[in-house]
Length: 489
Image 1 (tube, rainbow, N blue to C red):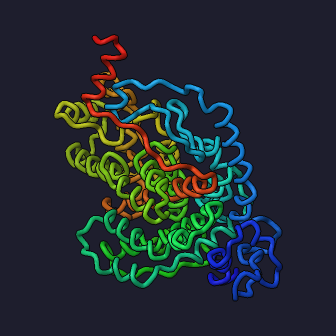
Image 2: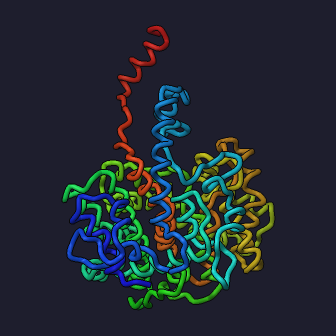
Image 3: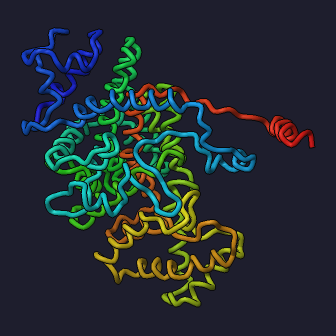
């Protein structure tokens, strides 16, 4: 693998040159001729001499055709009406309104999530996995989400090495994390660190120097992969500072992403490593309308750097109605376990659930804004638990709730989806392997979410997506509009 300086040389030359990324790729192998560097750029972005394309090379080949396809599609069908909007949707969080473009995944209410058309069971079968494991590697999913293609094992191995090479934190970010109070919520620390990485933004530097719009994607790509490579170190540093001795291991250039994350956190159990691979993959993307994905896209549409855009998305993920819900689920499960004292019979579970509902609370981990069936991400985690620890007490409790809660919620009649979502199970798996600090769980969710939202940022810049600016009305203006539609009534 080439050193980081070689990998970044093409980016530096783009800053010094008026030529495009594509034209510099075709320069002579003995040097680019655009600056004082003598690095052969066509080699500096290839990590294995196996003849296969790197992710960046493959995307550079794909996106011009994709951009043309979108342009022609808009030209031909741009005036087509794709849906109606009800007043209740405007006041109801815009649920169900078709108004976003998200290439990586689509969420069907009855089928669940598909990543580039593939279900979770399908990606578990087709995506490359570690030699010693069987769960898909999240970096393979990143490739799929960005290109729509399933990468080869060699391509994923090269991408893993690339991300590991980008992992080192700047001194000021490391010192900043060490200076934060331990009682500051881990998600607040996560966001602070990501914002502080703005100092490293290649996109921000390129934009300030007047880079051509056609090359926005290149610098966005570099920022996104730099950020993705650094997130395990940030997450581990927060975890070790707040809950352990403050010491973290070194990134191993020969490990895949999930294995490095597990080892940085201090967990070397091979089954926990497999869990990290699965966790990162299934928590990565859930189409573009959820708070963290939409926020990242929205802020990015203003041409804020990937660091600032992703940090904004993480502030959204920290909310208890979004990513922090997994922490609330676990706290509720512990309280329920203590009160039931081992009686996980159907009558006992049902009685407790009704007490929860009748007190004005919700059953955490059940229901979803879009889904109308059991979340496939829940099912994937349940199958992992059944294979690795079927007799774990907390898993038995979750399973018992799964048998009873949908019927109780259906009988109550206040939810459109009485089935469990991803949050109702993820904490149980982490608890089993000893990662018991629930306030840290959303940070892991944040690392995973990067694999879904960052490919869309790169795509947005590549196809020239505009700044997002929907129309808003006041209640008085809506009243006028409704009266006009209803003939003045």
